[in-house]
Amino acid sequence: MWTEITRQKYERGEQRYASDVTDAEGALIEPPMPAVKPLGGPRETGLRAVLDAILYIGRTGCQWRMLAKDLPPFTTVQGYFYDWRDNGLFEKINFELLLQAREAAGREPSPSAGVIDSQSAKTTESGGPRGYDAAKKIKGRKRHIVTDTCGL
Image (tube, rainbow, N blue to C red; front, side):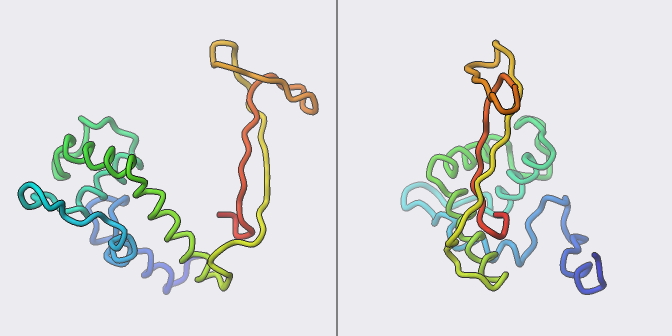
């Protein structure tokens, strides 16, 4: 439920877009960000602007070329995205935020128990390989997920 305290905490009035990173969120994400490479010229685009652009694409689902004009050029954002994806930066950020969320909830940083769940999804023959879930009598794929006790 929204209260005056939580409303102020999550207010995003100073951001251009709802997907932009706040200063507090930027401080959490900044440590694992890559340093400037020793070769080449100085960075012309800030990493925070690049991250805002990546989150904008993720939130709106727009194509690279349809990126808003007040964000960095799409080729720059695309290059950083592929580099960070291939180097595992998003996994590192996710893991660090997961640890902090568990500590904020008063739990140990590393989970000691997990919950396994599965879901059967219907597919067609053109959708690739498929199996059969005899319990639910569904032809398709079975997806599995493991979460900790906090649901993360």
